[in-house]
Every structure is written in C-alpha cells, then in structure tokens.
Amino acid sequence: SQTIHQWPATLVQPVGSPLSLECTVEGTSNPNLYWYRQAAGRGLQLLFYSVGIGQISSEVPQNLSASRPQDRQFILSSKKLLLSDSGFYLCAWSPGTSSPWGTDTQYFGPGTRLTVL
Amino acid sequence: AQSVTQPDIHITVSEGASLELRCNYSYGATPYLFWYVQSPGQGLQLLLKYFSGDTLVQGIKGFEAEFKRSQSSFNLRKPSVHWSDAAEYFCAVGPSFSGGYNKLIFGAGTRLAVHP
Image (cartoon, rainbow over the protein chains, first blue to last red):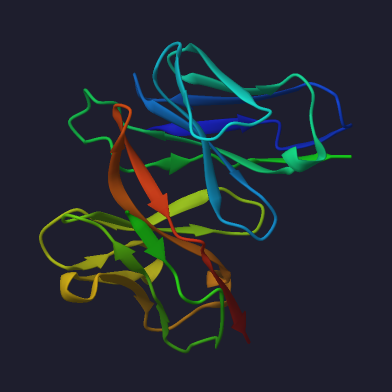
C-alpha cells in the first residue's frame, strides 16, 4: 500500500530564516505530487504541483519554491520566511499519468504546522 | 469557471442525530466528486468519491453521498453522528485539466461540531 510522509510535523522559525519541508511517498512510482497551504480558518490553497522529477509548476507567485530531486520526494523551500508564510502545509500525491487507476484522486500527508515569529 | 460551494461554514449536531453537509458545484461536464475529512491538526482523509455509475456512493466511517446532476449537488450524509465525527469536511470536484495534470477544486470546508 501507499503511504505519504511529511516532516517535520511542527516548526517554529524566525522571520527571515530559511525553510525546508520534506514530503516522501512510498509504494508507488511516478506519482503526481502537490503542496497545499491552509492558513488559519481558511481552505486549501494549491501552491505547487509536479508530474515528474524536476518538473514543477507554481499556482501562485509567492515567497516559496518547490523541488523534486527524486521520483517520490517533494521539497518546499524558502530563502527568507515572512510572517505570512505561517500556516499548515499539506503534501499530497495522486497516481501518475501512466497509472491504470487514473490521476484524479489525491491522498494527503499528515501536514506540517509552520509558525513564523 | 469551475467552482465548489459549501454553503455551511459551521454546523452543530447532537450525537446520534442525522447529518447532511451540502456541496454544490459548477462544472461544464460530468465531474469527479470527492469528500475529504480533516481532524484538527491532521491531514485530509478521503471519505468517498464519485466517478460514474450509481449516484449513491458509500464511503468509510458510515458516510454516504448522493450525486444529483439536476441540482449540481453532492451532499454528504450520515444517519447517526458520533462524537468522533467532529472535524472539518471538504468537498472537491475535478478534473480541472491544467498543465498536464488533473487539478482538484476544493470547497472552503464545513466545520462540524458534535454535542453530547
């Protein structure tokens, strides 16, 4: 079966510090990968998605970047955090385009709570 | 434009009462529809999904949802709510094809509180 991991679970960082959040998926190959953010009391905002190694698309311009150095690894980064970067960050995966199960169902990780002070 | 509306931001029910969470969508074709649940501080868990076929879909934890094309709705129901069902519920519609992948459009969520 497939599992998705995120770490760290919780992070408190000062304004202006760098950020690296990691997401890994097990039990599948060539997944589509996604980063979402939930601000307090708000819905899901899609930040980045990736259909393959090195292929990253951004949904909204922001202070964050994403990378996919390996097939099942997705990293969210920032060089200098802003207060507005605080939130709950969720990674998700869906079957890749070559999968017989289709690409539409997304499965979410446990999330990372980021607080920028 | 494709969109999902969850009209109720907060709902409170008594334990043992029935539940219906509303979801309306705007979509140009037959959509794929999903319900997810999020417990506090946790990720989203897939409750059920509709792709085609029987319009009444059974999911995990005793939930079901009914696709009504004429009303553009996909409401989530449970006959008897348990205290552990207190969570936030998200409806989603897809695919919204963009950039080589199928994007899901999420509603803003409905927060469910359960009174003992």
